[in-house]
Image (tube, rainbow, N blue to C red; front, side):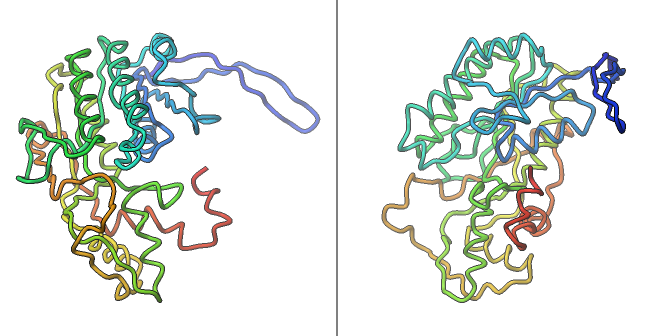
Length: 334
């Protein structure tokens, strides 16, 4: 279903320019995606936009010209965006998600991950908010972790996201929390994801290169997460019981060393130069859980889960542009 609005358009013909009004069909379902310039946010925005949702994306430092620029720590600005757009659904992807950065810049991270999330939830009263959280709310000592298991984060990032969850659900009891693990997908730079950054090590080829082989991860494709978010949103429009905590995760268990080998295999590249490092080096940064595997039965029981795209397929789709000359990469993503 859609609504029809009148829109001004400029028509160019040889020797003539005219401004005309045309009817434009706009989907009646409206979604606001925060962090729409980021790795997950781009995928979520695209998923909704391609499936008959009127989508508004907001960002900050990279927002313009494609998305709305909004400082989520500015309560007045957030209120204005929500009141103007009146979304049915908000998918809150914006966060400081780099654990080592959170350790160094804790106050700024708490402002975004906790306080801004609470403000958004309060202003979104009566709307369905999906708050993207992390498997790092768990300590990784006794996996797998269900939605009702007690969190025990090991680092400041995990603590900030757990506080954000609680603040969102306190301010907006009808909201949903979607916890996901390490993410990857179509990147603008390979260092945008802790998975795709391994591409540089894979391509080094001639020189031996150590890769972490301690922590068990479940790399998860952002396109799959985006599909889950849309399914949750569409079900919620019909069923108000879709609320509370949910888990979604890829199913292939790998260390970073095993991911790097799988990336090499996906591109038929050698991996013999990759050396598994079974001990964490000194000064490795924020403490990470050994294995924070998520148990995802709630989504499955509700028929809201999606079958993950196999890692080798998805990582090849994500990284193939970086096989070729850097000069044209930006034309692919911008």
